[in-house]
Image 1: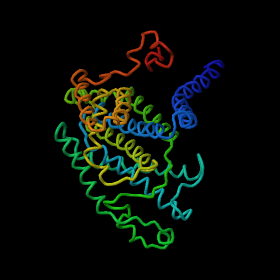
Image 2: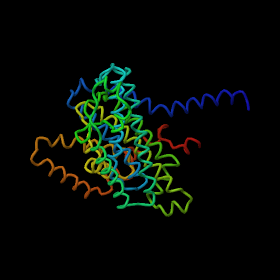
Image 3: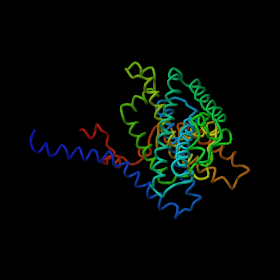
Image 4: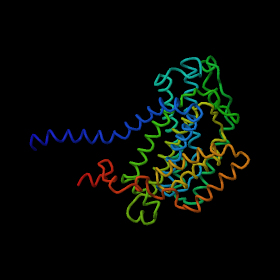
Length: 372
């Protein structure tokens, strides 16, 4: 090995690290820009809509890993979101009472309270991923309608269990002096819902987590694991004959999707004006995310994101037609599915429709092309 090789190798390694980190850095920079520029431009009402759209995109992209990439049919995704919401909300609510004596928001932007909120969202994702393992493991031999029934049952069971939980303890002294048996009843509000959670969710955190979710999903799709998942979607028997462990791929998809759903639930729980309740784990919310994945296209990350934006904003666009809003909303969905049964982008991403010359840019090259 020559001296020039010794000098070139670390440099190229550093460039590869920078290229790998660049999308995340760009995503965080965009999140900062949205946080500080958008509210003053569009006002608080439309800023709230943008937050809702961002959370919907996180949930839709994560569900796309299961429904789109592995071809499963889960309609219990809202259950994982709700587990994440209750876990993250419980951590910030009771930790705030123990540390600061109040459950109100503590600190400013990127202060100690917000970092506790980030940790709580990650814990919510981990708890949801454990639930994804528990649900996914016995469901590996199921597919189609049978898997849908199992995931639907999971959401309904979770909804009933949350209705049986205890009353929220909102007094700091009681929390500090209460025995552990007080928390054995899981004091998160029961059927009334979990109110009083500090409101840390901002445009920055929503779109920072969205950037991480989208980048992870895209890199997973292009990786060997993602190719294996896509092969399971196309023909599970053929994939198994080629030596792919289909059970492992489906379980990995469940766990990964549940993790990001739990993070999205944590963001939802800490959003201003939102009170999480057991009904969030029900069928209706799960069905909304299923519609987003179907409308966007199976396996298309950008298509699912566009569908999430459209379906989040459409009810507000039709607000002036309140009497006929649901009818118009349903009619538009039916028309879309009849005219584009494969979804908005089908199996493609948005840049697949761009001119060929754009695809030759350095950051669009595949790993095989870069090696050549």
